[in-house]
Image 1 (cartoon, rainbow, N blue to C red):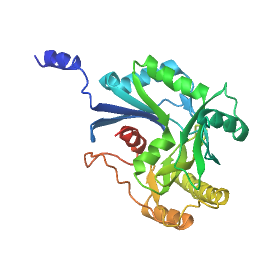
Image 2 (image 1 turned 30 degrees about the vertical axis):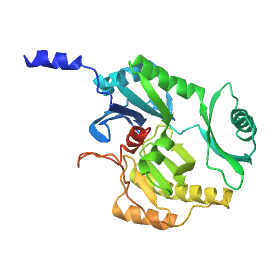
Image 3 (image 1 turned 135 degrees about the vertical axis):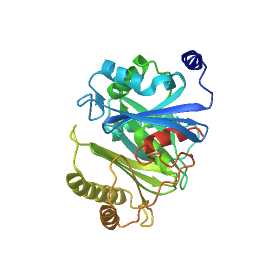
Image 4 (image 1 turned 90 degrees about the vertical axis):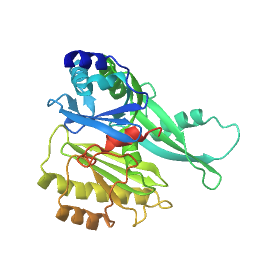
Length: 302
């Protein structure tokens, strides 16, 4: 009788407020499902070595099989996914505010000029930001077509009806739920930095270790160097919009820093660390740090 009940329940539709976020991060497929603002389940499945390298999938069929297993019945509902920030480029441009300006044409023209991208090899996305001093501000983002196609194809082959797809740095920014700060996402195989200003990710940087998994004693010195370089570069490139010293660090990712490393990071960056304050609710044993990207995806549209 129990088997029969199970079969009947499997055939029931997924509730309309049920959403699932899936990411390919570090060495795992990570899945989190929520009903409204409440996390109800989560899981992870190891990715075989070499299947994902520097953000690119080497075998979409093998990845589809892995995604199918990781998602289970959740693939029938609303699924949101994240693309890695690797090999993508973003830039904020300004132009005089004027009527009749075609922002799409302006975005594509500036992308070709500033980012040196070939439109046939990249997708160009743009978002109109808040105006400053009669200047129109536009965020440009370039995403390689080949990476996007690989992820979409793997999800499609896995039987997923994808409802939304966005870049990992934007999901991290949303997960931080803060107006200013630096999100630091740390994995054995790479790291991401996102600078938040006025509640928006103004710049980001994603690094991969080329398929290598670094031990903490190797990873941490690189983290110190890369983070300080990133903040200094942002401030020198944006003298009128530098990151304030009170803007905290938000740490996340599968690699957790011990207290002495966290203190050294605060001293090197010249700013404190702060916890994530997610508007989502989840059980006490939920590993929010390693699933921050998933949380950010689930918050999209709420």
